[in-house]
Amino acid sequence: MESGLKNKKVYETVIDQIKDMIISGELKKGDRLPPERDLVDTLNVSRTSIREALRALQIIGLVECRQGGGNFIRESFEDNLIEPLSLMFVLQNSRNLELIELRKSIEVQMAALAADKVTDTELGELEGIIKKMKKNPSEAESVRLDADFHYLIARASGNKLMESILRAVSSLMDTFIKETREELLVNPENDEKLVETHEDIAVALRSHDSSKAADAMERHLDFVAKNIRH
Amino acid sequence: MESGLKNKKVYETVIDQIKDMIISGELKKGDRLPPERDLVDTLNVSRTSIREALRALQIIGLVECRQGGGNFIRESFEDNLIEPLSLMFVLQNSRNLELIELRKSIEVQMAALAADKVTDTELGELEGIIKKMKKNPSEAESVRLDADFHYLIARASGNKLMESILRAVSSLMDTFIKETREELLVNPENDEKLVETHEDIAVALRSHDSSKAADAMERHLDFVAKNIRH
Image 1 (cartoon, rainbow over the protein chains, first blue to last red):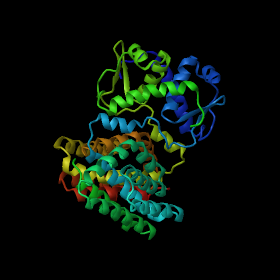
Image 2: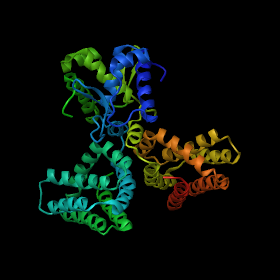
Image 3: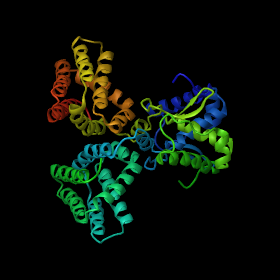
């Protein structure tokens, strides 16, 4: 960027320092950051700049401020406040087609990984979701169950990076699921078919068969893709 | 979160407002945000809170501040300053195995998409990179060429969302490429093999054959995966 406030450089330095401390392993999950006063002395910048940097790190969900206890590297990153990727996607005027392409690439692979790693508890949860899907839930609950089903497989895959990416686009995912269900359910037969393709995934995971799980996920997402407007 | 500064709620409101304006389409790429003073009046919060929110949005790369000209929604999101995903990955103690799983899922699909959409100019660029790879470049240049090759295919895929995700983990990607090359090149034969598997991808893209391109990318990444420590 060629322009910007002069002050920008200052808080950037602060962020870079904290970033470096994370990459070098000096700061780990749950660790407390040095007190603001120490950062002021060490980095030789104003307290305002330190605070701006910390605030930004809090907003992106990397740092949390505990009442009276200073700033800590977060233990968990599941609830990212801003979801920059979702917003950028909206701003890029991307279409549902791009999201389904992303979901196909990530979720098919995650289903295969999950077939290896899924626990009995997780299988029980997945089967519980299928059971609820079959009990004619309200549309709002159906949307919630659908999303829960996919996030649960993401967790079961054991790949935190891929899970984080799915969660980073979760507001897109949720809107996508809501909208595509509306389009699909114009044809009432699709409701049953949708539960069925979810169930196929759960069955494949229960048998711990990676290629069957990947195929089932691919068929499910292809079914969704075929029935929506792009 | 159960704790936090009281002030947090205030800047969160500001961010939520801006987020809503983006999702509703009221604010688009390149649009100017309302002046700070107007935001103070409309949202009835302090100027400090407005500034904190704007600063955080600048840091995550969503908003840019132009000298004397106010705050604008960025036109392009390629250079995300913090790359929260990369840092979170480091903090999660994730391993290279997770990154290769992610790369396999996303890049194989992107290669297939790129086979359809790649332009002659992009093909020329890819072939230019292969030519340079064959000319015994320095290790630092080899790393750069390798990364450029993969980002170029991401661009050619036409899926901005998937490209953004690859770029969001770019500092991981770059470190990964650097480290895996070091491990691979302990065996000097692998250097040639690495160029060869890249070339197979370029050839498949030139023939616009999606399944050949996906296979070539998969073989390339499997070759890398097989030869590294997890």
